[in-house]
Structure formats: structure tokens, C-alpha cells
Image (cartoon, rainbow, N blue to C red):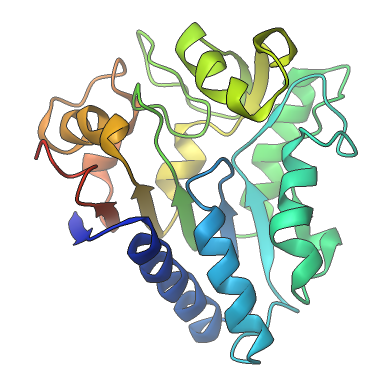
Length: 241
């Protein structure tokens, strides 16, 4: 485990973008695991700028996103497919046929989940996985539970997560109550992981993840078992370490 403490969100975003860009330049057919939400937005902006400067090529890159809201189509402005297109894919030279996100409109979540896991394996698993972290220490949408979820699966989002995500919607009632999320197996099979955290509201989760016991009630704590994980955290997120 490596911990990189930086001053603020901007510094976190630049450091994360440097690591992701280095991965792409070292292995031009890398498989990247990507995250959504507010935390990686700065990193994506930095990546777009690096691409505009012709310092990076995504033409042979494959991506897998961690999750998608169940019930939303990729055309819905609140979907994570829409988020990824708007905040990254539309601005770089990636082939969108090589960008994979669970189908939130599937009639068979179990089959969709199983197929998603198989596709990750067929592509050789993830070279670099980017993670954010919830204030309750969830990664992806793997919520605190009595056991670690293994494969991709349909998740019932808890009230804390729904409330946190309501900032992206017009009202709390509009926030989907379920999501399809990659499980811990694919996350932990990634060759390298970087986890980004910014802000005082993430400090307790970061402390419990890095210093606490490895328990499913703190989902991110399982990362203590990964051989190559780097935490990139700003001063506020690191304040309780």
C-alpha cells in the first residue's frame, strides 16, 4: 500500500491523471477500470488536456466502468454512460465500442452481471483501476454489508448513498434506488489500483479503510490485501490518519 498525500483536490486530480496517462503510454492497449461521481472529474479534465497536447493515444484502450444506475438508459442524462461520454469519451480518440458500462435497462440483471464479468476476463482483466470512495467507505456501489460481494451484481443503494447522490438530481425522489455494480473480485484482480479521496467528509472512511480491520462493513478495507494499491488523498481526507 502506498499513500500519496497532496494539498488539495486539484493536486489530487493532477497526480491521478499523471498515473493514468503513464499507464496508457507504457501499455497502449491497457484495460482501464473507471469511476464516476464528482471525485474523478478533475482527473478526467486533466486527461483531456494531456490528450489535446498530443501526449497520449487512446485508440487501442479498453475501459470498464464500475457501475450503472439500474433503470436508466445510456441516453439518460443522469446515467453513467452519459457522464462518461460528456466528461471523457467525447473528448479523446477512444473507440466507444471498447468502452463498457453495465446496461442499466436490462431485463435480466443477473445475466447482465455474469456477462460483464466474463467480458472483463476475456479482455485479460484490468490493468489500472481508478476508485473513488463513499463517505461510508463503499467502492463502486459495494455498500457496507455482512460479506464482501464477489462478482458484478444488482445492489440496493442505502439511504446514505442515495442522499449523497441526490446532489446530481432535481430531488431525492429522482435518485435510483438500485445499481449494477462490479464486485470485489474484478476490482481486486486489477493489476494496479489508485483510490482518490478529497474533502473532510471522506476522512473517517479513509481512516477506517487504511488503519481499520478488514471487514465488509468497511468495503474499501479489502484494499489492504491488494499488492499494488495507491491512495491519493488531499489534506482534509487524510486528516484522521
